[in-house]
Amino acid sequence: MDAPDRQAVKLWRVRKTIHEIVRDRGYMVSQHELDMSLEDFKSTHAASGVVDRSNLTFMVESQSQDKAKQLLVFFTEEEGLGIKHVKKIFERMAEQEVMHSIIIYQNSMTPSAQKIIQEMAPRWRVEIFKESELLVNITHHVLVPQHEVLTEEGKQTLLQRYRLKPSQLPRIMLNDPIARYYGLQRGEVVKIIRPSETAGKYVTYRLCH
Image (cartoon, rainbow, N blue to C red; front, side, top):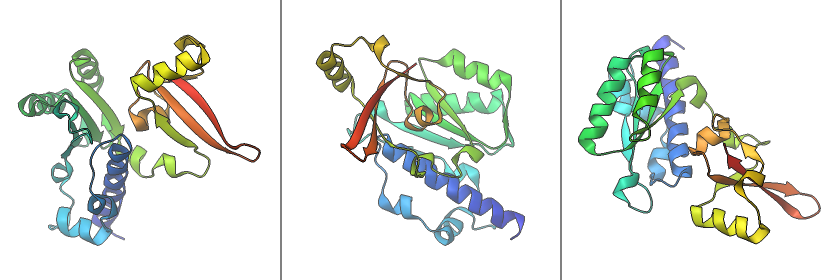
């Protein structure tokens, strides 16, 4: 397998995983996008023999069809993600009136790029993934239990039912791979469902911190 073919296989897998991520977060994703074969991917995105990363960028809408919950997913063309490219992404977000995006970069990111992303929050929410982090879907691993992010209403119902304060819940860190997969924010609660030989299933909850 030559270099362009290896690149195509890699980006096909990354693209599939990011579409699964946004679907699992409640965005509208067609089955066609999820099931796209490697050959279809090549014919669509690598007609010249090399994958055009800029052509992989896409936008999705929430299943609630709330325009405020649109999400832009960017694939960077440069080897490293620098402040110049990040500024262009913010400009595009402003033009399209999108407040939330995910940047998928190739190999490295400069400290200045990281800094400006932090400075622009919470006005603009930008998540960052390295391509190598998305080669496999971590939630498909046999040892990873089912996770469900609770709505604010669901969180309050849980706290009232068990007479708990949020601080009494076990924690899941913001940078935990599962927290990043679901885009958890501080204060959100995730429900974890594990199989149990005695009870059928065993449910726990964790607070994102």
